[in-house]
Amino acid sequence: MISAVRTALALLFVVISTTLGALVGFPWTWITGSADVLYAIAMWIVRTGLRLAGIRVQVEGIEPINPAETYIFMCNHVSNLDPPILIPAIPRRTSVLVKKELFQVPILGRAMRMADLVAVDRRNREAAVNSMRAAEEVMARGLNMTVFPEGTRSRDGLLLPFKKGPFYLATDSGIPVVPVTILGSDSLMPKGSTLIYPGMVRLVFHTPISPKRFTDNDELIAAVRREIASALPPSLREANLDSAS
Image 1 (spheres, rainbow, N blue to C red):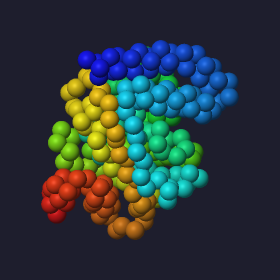
Image 2: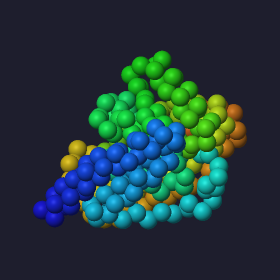
Image 3: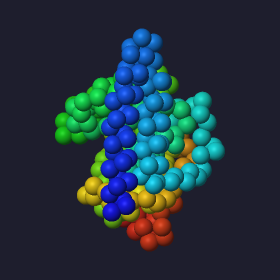
């Protein structure tokens, strides 16, 4: 019952504050040509919504990340909570590869376009290639990029196969990849659940990996996968490493 009330309160806050935030953020973005204020409003809404839902976030390993540099953050994916937990923890503004269907949501879709988020259509190869080109253009303007390379949520914590597009993006751009492991979000909002349960989530940022170190894309994929798996609980870590070998 308490979780249902917290979930409803958090969602109500997000809906109302997003509408009010758009009244400020949209005109400011149109006038100035900068989405920084809109992004700051969005991050405040997300952080406050998580607190209302009773979610606490413990961040580890962020110190080596230079806020002045551009990175591609790649994280495992086990819950719908993962993006709102991860994105506010990233130093400096980040773009995100987002399923194109979300761009059809009123207000949210317009805000994502104004914030330079990149729509992805994985069912269409040509559209997916164009999405990677758009992502590279966004990063060339100094924005980070955040990607969930599995493409969908894992039900059991085991890493799913990684999509190759984001890794071509890394090798083509030469921008370092920061592997990130998220732990605990699956129990707070499991796949298929509409309720958010209070609790602690750990975010583990790993050392940036330069794509220039690798001779081919598969080696980069394997390296990022190993880093993400390295912070998982022992049983999942061993299972993931075995499946990758």
